[in-house]
Length: 219
Image (tube, rainbow, N blue to C red; front, side, top):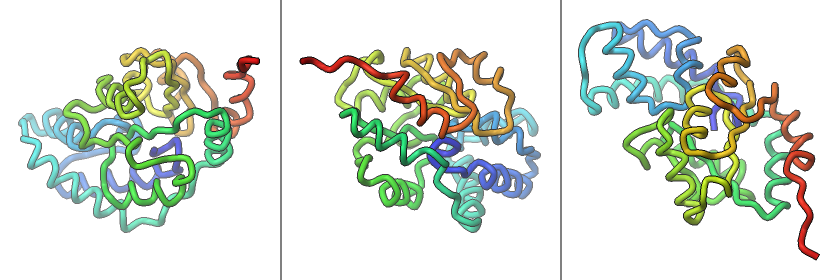
Protein backbone atom coordinates (compact mmCIF):
# COMPACT_ATOMS: atom_id res chain seq x y z
CA UNK A 1 0.00 0.00 0.00
CA UNK A 2 2.42 2.72 1.17
CA UNK A 3 4.94 3.56 -1.50
CA UNK A 4 3.24 1.33 -4.08
CA UNK A 5 -0.41 2.41 -4.20
CA UNK A 6 0.02 5.74 -2.42
CA UNK A 7 2.82 8.31 -2.30
CA UNK A 8 2.49 8.22 1.47
CA UNK A 9 5.96 7.40 2.75
CA UNK A 10 7.07 11.04 3.23
CA UNK A 11 4.09 11.49 5.58
CA UNK A 12 4.90 8.27 7.40
CA UNK A 13 8.52 9.33 7.86
CA UNK A 14 7.46 12.60 9.49
CA UNK A 15 4.83 10.90 11.67
CA UNK A 16 7.33 8.29 12.86
CA UNK A 17 9.92 10.94 13.72
CA UNK A 18 7.51 13.21 15.62
CA UNK A 19 5.70 10.44 17.50
CA UNK A 20 8.78 8.55 18.60
CA UNK A 21 10.39 11.76 19.90
CA UNK A 22 7.61 11.86 22.50
CA UNK A 23 8.78 8.50 23.85
CA UNK A 24 12.49 9.32 23.82
CA UNK A 25 13.16 7.37 20.62
CA UNK A 26 15.20 8.88 17.81
CA UNK A 27 13.87 7.73 14.45
CA UNK A 28 15.28 9.32 11.30
CA UNK A 29 13.48 9.38 7.93
CA UNK A 30 15.83 6.71 6.59
CA UNK A 31 14.82 4.46 9.50
CA UNK A 32 11.18 4.77 8.41
CA UNK A 33 12.05 3.72 4.86
CA UNK A 34 14.35 0.91 5.99
CA UNK A 35 11.67 -0.61 8.27
CA UNK A 36 8.74 0.08 5.92
CA UNK A 37 6.35 -2.81 5.51
CA UNK A 38 6.93 -4.27 8.97
CA UNK A 39 4.14 -4.20 11.54
CA UNK A 40 4.33 -0.88 13.36
CA UNK A 41 4.42 -2.54 16.77
CA UNK A 42 7.34 -4.70 15.69
CA UNK A 43 9.28 -1.66 14.52
CA UNK A 44 8.65 0.12 17.83
CA UNK A 45 9.69 -2.85 19.95
CA UNK A 46 12.89 -3.14 17.94
CA UNK A 47 13.69 0.57 18.30
CA UNK A 48 13.00 0.55 22.05
CA UNK A 49 15.20 -2.50 22.53
CA UNK A 50 18.02 -0.95 20.49
CA UNK A 51 17.94 2.55 21.98
CA UNK A 52 16.64 2.01 25.51
CA UNK A 53 17.82 -1.52 26.19
CA UNK A 54 14.44 -2.80 27.34
CA UNK A 55 11.77 -5.09 26.02
CA UNK A 56 8.18 -3.86 25.88
CA UNK A 57 5.07 -5.93 25.30
CA UNK A 58 2.81 -5.57 22.31
CA UNK A 59 0.22 -3.59 24.27
CA UNK A 60 2.71 -0.85 25.12
CA UNK A 61 4.03 -0.81 21.57
CA UNK A 62 0.45 -0.49 20.32
CA UNK A 63 -0.12 2.58 22.49
CA UNK A 64 2.98 4.17 21.01
CA UNK A 65 1.89 3.19 17.51
CA UNK A 66 -1.51 4.77 18.12
CA UNK A 67 0.28 8.10 18.63
CA UNK A 68 2.11 7.65 15.35
CA UNK A 69 -1.22 6.88 13.66
CA UNK A 70 -2.83 9.97 15.17
CA UNK A 71 -0.11 12.24 13.81
CA UNK A 72 -0.19 10.55 10.41
CA UNK A 73 -3.92 11.12 10.02
CA UNK A 74 -3.50 14.82 10.79
CA UNK A 75 -1.31 15.21 7.71
CA UNK A 76 -2.52 15.92 4.15
CA UNK A 77 -4.01 12.93 2.37
CA UNK A 78 -1.35 11.38 0.11
CA UNK A 79 -1.92 11.08 -3.62
CA UNK A 80 -2.41 7.84 -5.50
CA UNK A 81 0.93 6.79 -6.96
CA UNK A 82 1.19 7.66 -10.66
CA UNK A 83 0.64 4.66 -12.92
CA UNK A 84 -1.18 2.53 -10.35
CA UNK A 85 -4.71 2.84 -11.72
CA UNK A 86 -3.47 2.04 -15.22
CA UNK A 87 -1.58 -0.98 -13.90
CA UNK A 88 -4.58 -2.26 -11.95
CA UNK A 89 -6.78 -1.90 -15.04
CA UNK A 90 -4.36 -4.08 -17.01
CA UNK A 91 -4.20 -6.69 -14.26
CA UNK A 92 -8.00 -6.72 -14.03
CA UNK A 93 -8.35 -7.02 -17.81
CA UNK A 94 -6.04 -10.05 -17.74
CA UNK A 95 -8.52 -11.76 -15.41
CA UNK A 96 -6.12 -11.68 -12.47
CA UNK A 97 -7.04 -10.97 -8.87
CA UNK A 98 -5.70 -7.85 -7.15
CA UNK A 99 -4.81 -8.13 -3.46
CA UNK A 100 -3.13 -5.81 -0.96
CA UNK A 101 -0.69 -7.04 1.70
CA UNK A 102 0.17 -4.24 4.11
CA UNK A 103 1.85 -3.77 7.46
CA UNK A 104 -0.84 -1.21 8.29
CA UNK A 105 -4.32 -1.97 9.54
CA UNK A 106 -6.15 1.24 10.47
CA UNK A 107 -9.77 1.32 9.34
CA UNK A 108 -9.51 4.75 7.63
CA UNK A 109 -6.74 3.39 5.40
CA UNK A 110 -8.78 0.32 4.49
CA UNK A 111 -11.76 2.54 3.67
CA UNK A 112 -9.63 4.67 1.38
CA UNK A 113 -8.32 1.59 -0.43
CA UNK A 114 -11.88 0.53 -1.13
CA UNK A 115 -12.89 4.05 -2.21
CA UNK A 116 -9.98 4.49 -4.60
CA UNK A 117 -9.61 0.94 -5.93
CA UNK A 118 -13.02 -0.64 -5.26
CA UNK A 119 -13.58 -1.58 -8.89
CA UNK A 120 -10.44 -3.74 -8.75
CA UNK A 121 -10.19 -4.71 -5.08
CA UNK A 122 -12.47 -6.47 -2.60
CA UNK A 123 -12.02 -6.12 1.17
CA UNK A 124 -11.66 -9.89 1.47
CA UNK A 125 -8.42 -9.56 -0.53
CA UNK A 126 -6.78 -7.09 1.88
CA UNK A 127 -4.25 -8.59 4.31
CA UNK A 128 -3.33 -6.28 7.20
CA UNK A 129 -1.03 -6.30 10.22
CA UNK A 130 -3.87 -7.76 12.26
CA UNK A 131 -4.16 -10.88 10.07
CA UNK A 132 -0.75 -12.23 11.10
CA UNK A 133 1.37 -12.59 14.21
CA UNK A 134 4.64 -12.15 12.33
CA UNK A 135 4.84 -9.28 9.85
CA UNK A 136 7.28 -8.58 7.06
CA UNK A 137 10.12 -9.54 6.51
CA UNK A 138 8.63 -12.90 7.50
CA UNK A 139 6.70 -14.60 4.67
CA UNK A 140 3.52 -14.85 6.76
CA UNK A 141 1.71 -11.78 5.30
CA UNK A 142 2.16 -12.98 1.73
CA UNK A 143 1.30 -16.55 2.63
CA UNK A 144 -1.90 -15.18 4.18
CA UNK A 145 -2.50 -13.20 1.00
CA UNK A 146 -2.22 -16.39 -1.04
CA UNK A 147 -4.72 -18.03 1.27
CA UNK A 148 -7.18 -15.15 0.97
CA UNK A 149 -6.86 -15.26 -2.82
CA UNK A 150 -8.18 -18.83 -2.84
CA UNK A 151 -5.30 -20.90 -1.46
CA UNK A 152 -3.05 -20.10 -4.40
CA UNK A 153 0.38 -21.62 -4.86
CA UNK A 154 3.33 -19.19 -4.74
CA UNK A 155 3.99 -19.62 -8.45
CA UNK A 156 0.46 -18.41 -9.20
CA UNK A 157 1.12 -14.91 -7.82
CA UNK A 158 3.30 -11.85 -8.35
CA UNK A 159 4.40 -9.49 -5.57
CA UNK A 160 4.96 -5.77 -6.24
CA UNK A 161 6.99 -4.17 -3.44
CA UNK A 162 8.94 -0.98 -2.78
CA UNK A 163 10.56 -1.76 0.58
CA UNK A 164 13.51 -4.04 1.43
CA UNK A 165 11.57 -5.87 4.17
CA UNK A 166 8.64 -6.37 1.81
CA UNK A 167 10.88 -7.75 -0.93
CA UNK A 168 12.44 -10.13 1.58
CA UNK A 169 8.97 -11.28 2.64
CA UNK A 170 7.84 -11.92 -0.93
CA UNK A 171 11.00 -13.85 -1.73
CA UNK A 172 10.68 -15.86 1.51
CA UNK A 173 7.14 -16.78 0.45
CA UNK A 174 8.66 -18.06 -2.84
CA UNK A 175 6.63 -15.62 -4.94
CA UNK A 176 8.02 -13.85 -8.02
CA UNK A 177 8.80 -10.40 -6.60
CA UNK A 178 9.02 -7.13 -8.51
CA UNK A 179 10.61 -4.18 -6.73
CA UNK A 180 9.66 -0.59 -7.59
CA UNK A 181 12.11 1.86 -6.03
CA UNK A 182 9.76 4.75 -5.25
CA UNK A 183 11.71 5.92 -2.18
CA UNK A 184 15.18 7.34 -1.44
CA UNK A 185 16.95 4.03 -0.87
CA UNK A 186 19.57 2.82 -3.34
CA UNK A 187 18.36 0.15 -5.74
CA UNK A 188 20.92 -2.26 -4.29
CA UNK A 189 18.90 -2.30 -1.04
CA UNK A 190 16.09 -4.00 -2.97
CA UNK A 191 18.20 -6.20 -5.21
CA UNK A 192 20.16 -7.54 -2.25
CA UNK A 193 16.91 -8.82 -0.75
CA UNK A 194 16.36 -10.98 -3.82
CA UNK A 195 14.02 -8.97 -6.05
CA UNK A 196 13.52 -10.74 -9.38
CA UNK A 197 13.03 -7.45 -11.26
CA UNK A 198 13.39 -3.80 -10.35
CA UNK A 199 11.82 -0.66 -11.79
CA UNK A 200 12.45 2.96 -10.86
CA UNK A 201 8.79 4.03 -10.80
CA UNK A 202 5.26 2.69 -11.06
CA UNK A 203 4.49 4.11 -14.55
CA UNK A 204 7.50 2.19 -15.87
CA UNK A 205 6.10 -1.07 -14.50
CA UNK A 206 2.67 -0.22 -15.92
CA UNK A 207 4.14 0.36 -19.39
CA UNK A 208 6.03 -2.95 -19.25
CA UNK A 209 3.28 -5.11 -17.71
CA UNK A 210 1.87 -6.61 -20.91
CA UNK A 211 5.36 -7.24 -22.25
CA UNK A 212 6.45 -8.97 -19.05
CA UNK A 213 3.39 -11.13 -18.57
CA UNK A 214 2.08 -11.65 -22.09
CA UNK A 215 1.00 -15.17 -22.87
CA UNK A 216 -0.78 -17.06 -25.61
CA UNK A 217 -4.42 -17.57 -24.71
CA UNK A 218 -5.98 -20.98 -25.54
CA UNK A 219 -7.47 -21.10 -29.01
